[in-house]
Image 1 (cartoon, helix red, strand yellow):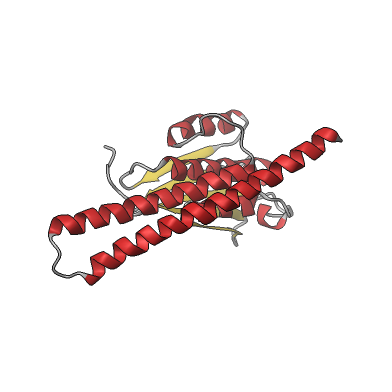
Image 2 (spheres, one colour; image 1 turned 45 degrees about the vertical axis):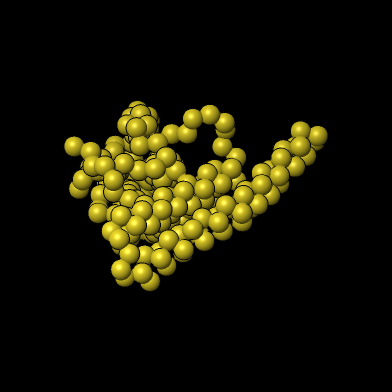
Length: 217
């Protein structure tokens, strides 16, 4: 009983710290973004280097705001301490699900870009949760489609799996997986949709924005 009470107290404190940090840091970054954008749009005759500097300030602040929101989400989710997974860990994640009996067809389209650590963490967790749902609720005799569609400023992650006839879709099963994925996408500045289609397949689509700086070959 004592350990359980201590854990509840720690969870409440983590939530309080997350709220406080968000209120302070997120507000400050939002002010920086608004000021930088306002200066760029209102001053028509400022030198090009100044415009470029303001654009860099705005982009950096937006990236930092996204990182803060995602990392505070991790604090609320009570993740274990240590390095967090990212894009480089997806191969191992998919391999583990394949070894568990899930037939995954993974395709990537477009030109891949470097994601921030926070956005990469969001992508990893969304893929992890969606594949877990497919393993638990899906028809394992049919393949799961995992698609990465790289756009100019956002990555669409689409996971589609067949449902067992008569079983409830994950979105209707009352668990926390779908809301959790939506929260992770929202914290990264994106959005997520999850629904069962007319063909007996369940589809998760997450859109994660990014600033394209370097393009991988």
